Length: 547
Image (cartoon, rainbow, N blue to C red; front, side, top):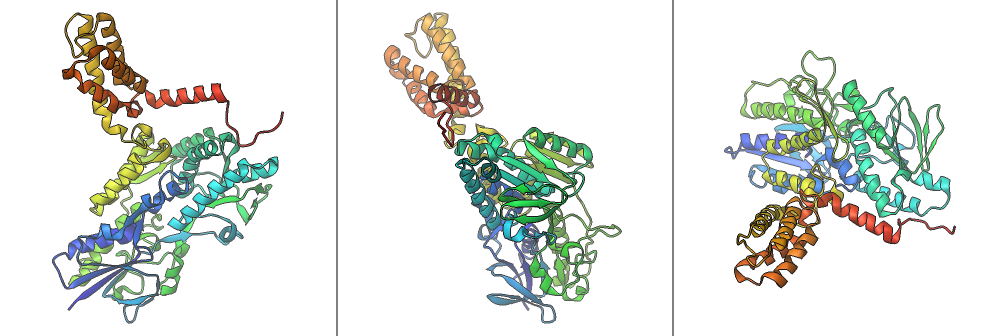
């Protein structure tokens, strides 16, 4: 008789649980796994702040479920909105159908918790879904555009003020992205980036409290050094269309309040009739079975679960890392139910630490029992942690997509390797050719200087010196376009030898700006463009006034 496993929610826990179960029952045709989500794709929620600030395109954090489960023949994908769970008859009820189950995994995820603050839903912006990220992305561009064109100083400042409420993971990483993004917006709309004011508001006396105080102090210093105003011990009491009210402080005039202050269980789970704990999280036993419904084989994982290690006083935090650990436990225990076993695995908190990125180049990691790592290496570790999840779900497609979107196809140089990899052309792939050609010209120039025949046999010692200099410039990627152009001219007017004609084609290929990849042109060309442009035309502005 066929047995049905239903997984509700294709988040971090839902996808990994489904993957583990699909592998476990790969050779068992009598077991079917149904994965239900309101979207046809898995959203990498922890990177939504990158979408909101145009660091990556919206589809960069979307991973199509068909791609992820293409080879899992025992997995059925369903796009639907779940509304209820009939526990007695063991059916999941959704808007477009009913789905019977022998075992059920609830992993709907969370949603923003506004703690009843007036005006947050109507006037604030959240970052908990793709729709949220696109809405905020559109708004930030629009509000800065309008602010740049506004003549009235007070209205202009209000439009160019962005308030972020909450300094947890989402809030801290949003602040970090805004440090970089305001430079992009300022350039786009021809204003001074310092005109865009970003304020971090935190109700607690300290900020970024998931880190120890040493790391938190470094993070606070970084964001303050980058122009972010920090207001701790500041509780927001109301959010209006044009202002944010703070307890015992003057209101902040703004049209942009990004609310990242808390998370609670998805409101749909409120209808399931399962006991809830703090933040509406569904109470489970040590095996992550829904309390009171152990005999129904109902499990909870991810942000919905009030997962608590046996003997611990508090549930684990609602993070992607914890969701993954819960997925392993749930997959094992569901398999036991399906096979009629009882060797259940108890949940244990295996937290490996925290990694927080503050933009594309600076991060803070607190890992391996408290070891502190800061800066560029911590940012690389954050990428490594994301790739590790894709390894766990065994998706080479997802790993490749992540690398392309985060490293190779990112605009405005906002990758951990800067514009060395994130260019609009394929200059990275000409790097080996540039290094080879530069060395070749250098040694050929030395040969000509010594009177020994080289590639360009007709060159004089003086021209050999020039060839040597051009080789150095090309190798180190400095003024690469000019250097290769001079090589072309030298070949056309001085050499004329067919065996050396390959030099002409290589020099043409390297006119593509190859020095912008691991070369000095990454700094030299922008400096030259900026200096030359300002000396010729001045500084573009959003508003010109008669003097």
